[in-house]
Length: 125
Image (cartoon, rainbow, N blue to C red):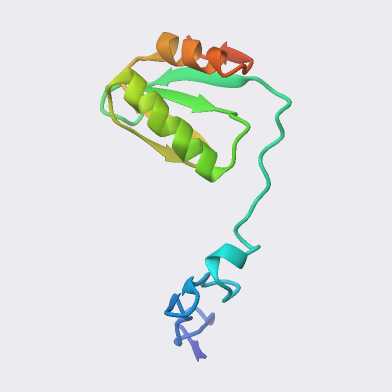
């Protein structure tokens, strides 16, 4: 341990990140990723509707379609994001529990989410 200029302690020894016996290791709990419990968060509550909106703020005027409130875990969101990007024929990303798809595809995304049986609402203008 060493103290930084701000008085905080810093652990200079890094943790094990890969083991030939177990594969990838969680840097926080130091267990194999398959057995890690610190990063596994349960799926969000599925009580509310999935919100679809178009945003341009902070994107130099370029619009993106944002999907928020999907009742899925991180892996499920990544799969849904890939499916929606393919359906819309554009790029995008999954971050902070939301899916962002480049361009204005609100109607197409809402139609696809309704096919999955979710309650979908358009938010914003």
